[in-house]
Length: 95
Image 1 (cartoon, rainbow, N blue to C red):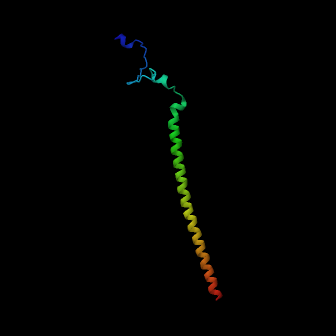
Image 2 (spheres, helix red, strand yellow):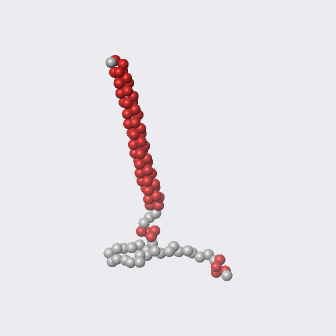
Image 3 (cartoon, helix red, strand yellow):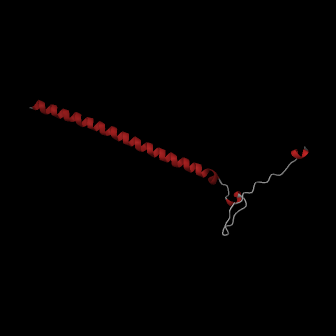
C-alpha cells in the first residue's frame, strides 16, 4: 500500500520511428527533432486565421462593390430617362 504513495520519477515517453532508413539519422524523442517555439505552436492557426479572414474580407468587399455599381448604374439610368423626358417635353412645347 505504501508503494503506491511513494514518489516516483516519471520519464517522458520515447517516440521512435517504426521504420527507418539507412541514410537518415533520427532523434529518439520528438522534442529533440523540433524545438517548440511560439511560432511552431501558434503559427499555423494564426496563418489560417489570417488567410481565411483575408479571403472573407476581400470576397465581401467585391460583392459590396458589385452591388454598389449596379445601384449606381440604376440611378444614372433613371437620371438619363428623366432628362430625356424633360427634353421631349421641351421640344413638344416649342413645336
